[in-house]
Image 1 (tube, protein in one colour):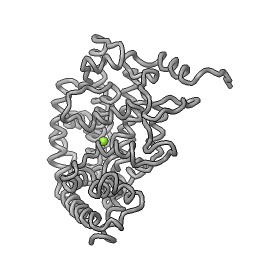
Image 2 (tube, helix red, strand yellow):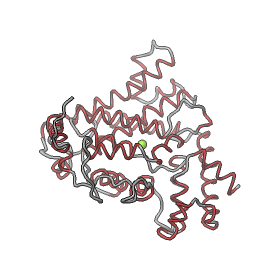
Image 3 (cartoon, rainbow, N blue to C red):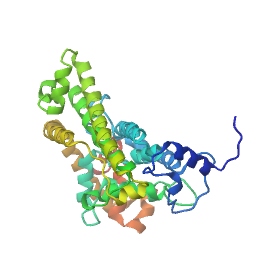
Length: 370
Ligand code: MG
């Protein structure tokens, strides 16, 4: 064993200096944390962020939150947790190929959906309506509340005290619809991996659960081509082939177009890449094809009558529970009651509801509001 007593940051900086590109976010350039902490003997700052997110309660609860399909449809389909793990895997693959900071990428990927309430985007819309007089609700903003206030794991500070870079990237996610800011490349990789992952796994789940057929799916051009090349396969293998080819083609396309442009522009730091507004973009052809596939999924899967029915029940339950709890704060757990004074009753109730898994939400509805 090597007992060399090098300072850990020096060791991490050496390692990153060898393997990361100049335009990657290097740990040595981190702006640090709001509450100062001593360096860890063998983990870099973004590794520590990743571990803090992985070990927090809100992350584990993703196992009980729906991605697209609820638990009454069996155990095959993705949950919010397995979606997150697929995003992290695809994002790390892209990050390694582009020589970006994989520790930062993994932290951002594990964080990206941590603020999702029960019942996916329908739950988010319901809470947004409930909180319309208190600033609304978005899962991306709620992720910041979780890691800055709600998770209590340390005596010295509330939240997880994540690095400035991880918080800044999550803030960009929360604001991106209204912002022209370009985030660091690691955040862009996670964003791209998110849509690559959900298009592939929602296609797989929708086929497996019988919401769409392979023949219907062939209407989407990206998939039609994949099916044409693999038509000799049995249906289950064909479905698998669609999933991994969809991921592989999109990742390959993004890496190819990005690597060429990065070589040409050659930003010399992460900060410079942001300042220049460098965007990770797929080719125009791939963009056109994925736009059509996304439209297909919206029309045939996400708006499927079976899913619309489940979502409308969930939305009604959240509305009724919100009304019940804002008038009967005694039903809130101690941690939420402690926040009543700080953030007001509506936000405290909204944050409590947002933390629920789908199952717990149903149980509490039966107990409190039915
Ligand atoms: Mg996601």
